[in-house]
Image (cartoon, rainbow, N blue to C red; front, side, top):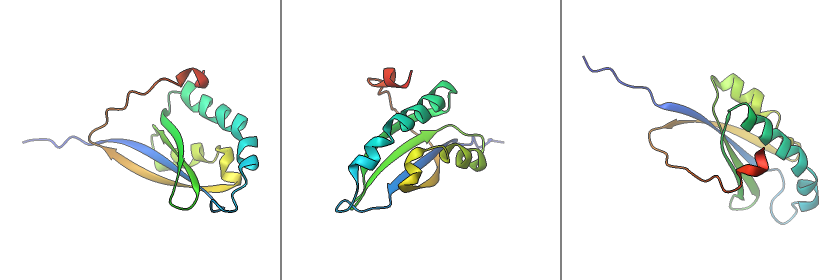
Length: 112
């Protein structure tokens, strides 16, 4: 009998700013970047960080952090350390990976 192989689960921490672009306070965001980098460095050092980056949604800034986690509860605990949660919210999505070919390490030195 063929056994179905489970997909690898990655947790997507999707951060969205509380304020829309028009009223977003860039200075408040920028003041949290050192803490953000420390949080990302700790995830990287523990082998939990898969990928991270910033960007935005249609009407507000945002970011994405992909992590390895053993459970949704652990992912929630890790996401609570994001200092950007002080000016936004993080939603957690479980991503059942059936294909990924991400090999972008140009900025990895910032995480060490």
